[in-house]
View (cartoon, rainbow, N blue to C red):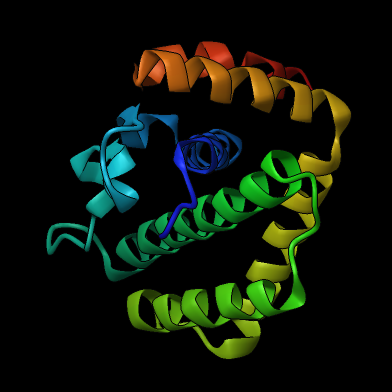
Length: 171
């Protein structure tokens, strides 16, 4: 993930935090940081990297991996949407949408053995929901405040992030 500048990076990190929150995955990370690179901007718990367990049934393992894939999809889409729709106040171009889909398709195929049509349904659902969310004026205002706060504080733990995003739970 390449960021244009620190502001763009803050909006991307905020977007990822929102993705984790709306997919009820707050327990999968411990902190966010502007000073880290790429996905290291979020410090994930070991549960996020769950790749199966021989003591757990194949069905339960696959369902867990599918849920983590949905979270990953959500945070990647939310990163881009937050940067474009809130940070830049523009729409996400179709070319970027297609690139996102292709990258997430490969991940869904590799991690969950999903077929393209299954991935497309998940992607379209996440993309539509996040488009509506980031178009909401209250969300935009919250995101601007959160990005400014993150930029000045440099990092936040998951409890501080939850406090910043408490408005999402009321929507």
